[in-house]
Length: 309
Image (tube, rainbow, N blue to C red):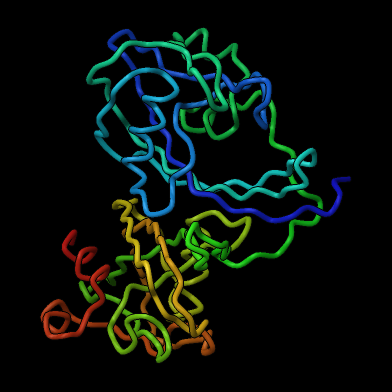
């Protein structure tokens, strides 16, 4: 049994990098790290206001000495693990990028939570103690599972903490749907009064709860906000936005950093939209034809995402 643990959330970005021979770039956790001796993809925590792509470039250089460029987004996943020695239950939203080396030279980290950096052949990788998320990213079984809390603590999709200037700040990871029906209509939701963007039309979706995975979280939000049931088709991309003085229902300015994953979703059997979570940020949901969307007041995020259709 794990004792009562303090909940903590973080957003992290990692790079999947292979060479011409098929070897993969890995780093080993140092003795003082949470999982000493385990191997993972290079990467780490996304700083407040930092784009995840910038984070994986920064972290890979620090851990391996190699300069990289991001070539694509492979996957987004979340995990919850218990760290009893730190009295923490840690939920991490992980963005996995495909990257390529553009310069530098391989070296071990001079400081931080890793102590070795290596190119590992496919046969060598299979013998290493891989972190579960790394094994999943490489299509391998994990040598060991993370310890999970017996009774996961409750925590909303964000955690307010004091920033350097004393003002509250929060990182929030969310998943949104670019959802259509077989007729080509687009599903949108209207933002409630008292929330940023009030009155504008937004994508269905929202913050991932503590311990949730992005896909199931998005399907839950889709049903709560619109009454629809959909299926995920593809991960479209990730956006990062910071608003240093956003005022929402809390009633005071918060330094917000939002990281949002966008998914293509098909609703095969559309029904009349209905908002079930009437106390939340959505007050209305509606199906629109592409021509009808053109004249709507849209949030900036929605305009950007719909451009992918």
